[in-house]
Structures are given as C-alpha cells and as structure tokens.
Length: 107
Image (tube, rainbow, N blue to C red; front, side, top):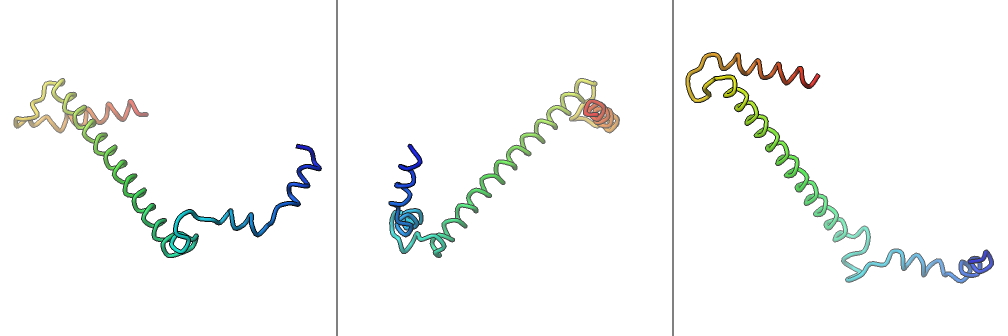
C-alpha cells in the first residue's frame, strides 16, 4: 500500500466509530460492558478457577515427589539389609547414610 493510499484510509476513519468498535462487547451490552459489575464478577470467577487449578496441580506434583522420595528411601534401606517392618534399631543409621549420600550427589 502506498503512502497516499494509507493516508486516505486513515483520513476516512471515524475515530468515534473505531473506538465504539474497539470497546464493543458481543451479547447483552448492559451486562458485559467493560468495568461493569458483571465484568468484575466474571474476572474474579476466572481468577478463582485459575488459582484453584494451579494450587491443585502444585499439590499433586508435591505429593508425587514426596511419594517417590519415600519409595526410593524404602528401596535403599531394604537394599542395605534393614527390615522396615521389624524393630531394627539401625534404621536411623540407614536413614542418615541415605540422606548423606543424596546430599553428596546433589552438591
């Protein structure tokens, strides 16, 4: 488009009509007008649902991570010959050894 054609197009625009189209809302204009009570309620409801969804997702990830860590620790303790179901007094030593091993690996 040439500069003259662009200038003619801009000159032909009605600023009030452009602004009305930009702010136009489909549906019931009294209920969905930007800034109306219904608009605020809709935004609040959307934020609530979004925050609730992500809180549940974070909780599920944390739960899976903790369960995975517990299962990993149980396997390691059993591999070292300790009985998790009995009265093995060396279980604390096994847990300390396991924790130290993972601290070294993380460092």
